[in-house]
Image (cartoon, rainbow, N blue to C red; front, top):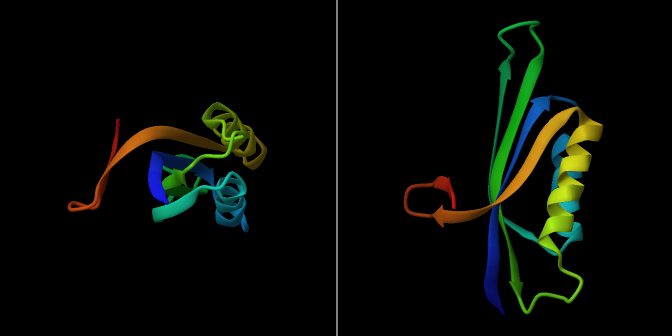
Length: 105
């Protein structure tokens, strides 16, 4: 199997239990593997709400199933984000493994 189609996913929004599980389950449900993932929390500057951030790199293996549709995955993540009161995105990415930094491509 060869790696194919690498993407960077991000989430920003109010923190609550199960948020990581819901996003990673959605990715896994489409056959994506998570290579790297980082999470962070901070107090919002206005209102004192705890904000949660997650970002990572996921990839699919070749051969992709005929049902694989990156547009549908992006839409599902955006809808899931709406239901979680968060912004969730997925973009094509280049993973610079030497620096540990993710670059949107």
